[in-house]
Amino acid sequence: MTSVPIYSADGSSAGKVELPKVFAEDVRDELIKRAVLSEESEEFQPKGTFYRAGLQTTARYVGRKEAYHSLKNRGGAMLPRELYPKGRIGRVRVVPWAVKGRRAHPPKVAKVLVERINKREKAKALRSAIAATSRKEIVSKKHIFSDVVIPIILDEKCEAMKKTKDVFALFEKIKISKDIERAADRRKARTGHRYGGTKTPRSILLVSATQVPLLKAARNMPGVTVKTVDNLQVRDLAPGGVPGRLTVWTKAAIEALK
Image (tube, rainbow, N blue to C red; front, side):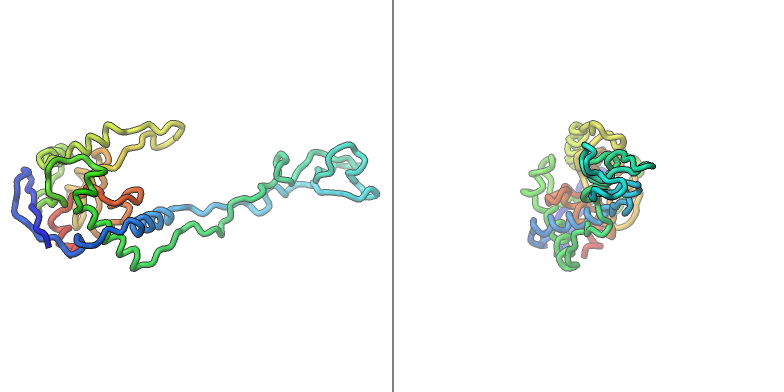
């Protein structure tokens, strides 16, 4: 396998490490897309309605002329109407186009919302998405960075960083900070949304083996996502189902992939 440099806390080279076999996998775009859709659909919440909604009324349709409350020869539409005392009729109810009527096709709780995917296919998609992070021709389509060898790997001392400004300074030395600036500049207001007033593009994905101070220091930068290897999902590596996210790994995370 290919050997890539390891960056220290001051941005200098701290040796090299051999990449695991997972980075040599083929990039399967269609498999990654399916896996992302499957992961996102798992968060959908089933919706349903009360089965008697729109039907809790005295309204009923009376068609026979001789029947009490008959609707014939009254000059109005022969539709289900509220029944009043002494044979009087009221407003139209029940039908979908009436005020307070039932819905024609309400959402069903039994509807299948989750898009299933085979376990082996999902594992293959995850390996494929990881491999895409090491292909410079794919990553350069979505992100801004200078002449740097990818994947970017940090040594153990970087995991102890506790300040966001220190992490950003490290990214500046590695020459990938422009991607964070791109995400900050392209923030958009979500007009009409009550919560989550801004929409921020994805920038860097930071992956470590365990929960370390580095993750907490970097998580608040625009567009940055922090994950551990155990919690890594396909949609983290390929937002929107498009592979090739600019990913920064720690040395321990690379060892965990082996």
